[in-house]
Length: 73
Image 1: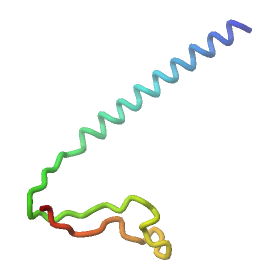
Image 2: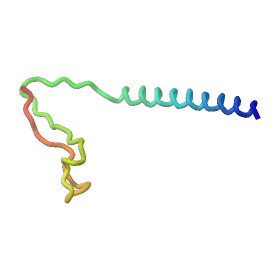
Image 3: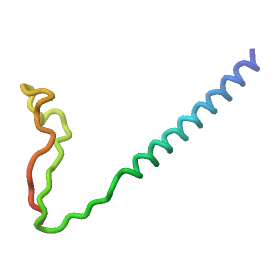
Image 4: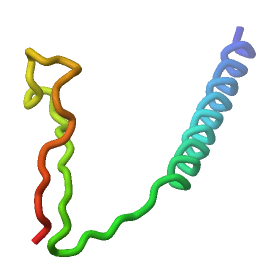
């Protein structure tokens, strides 16, 4: 019984290590695709609407995801 508990703890540690490694692989893969952008004064940009309360409840998934354009100062 005690041996089973010890092996269960070891399996949980192995699963946790696998989870951490998988998260690192996903992060590395995502960061390869992301490109840093620099904005200068006068550029037009869009602002993402993140909170769900600001989106129209009547339009649902058809509501806008972006607002703008705004000019960078």
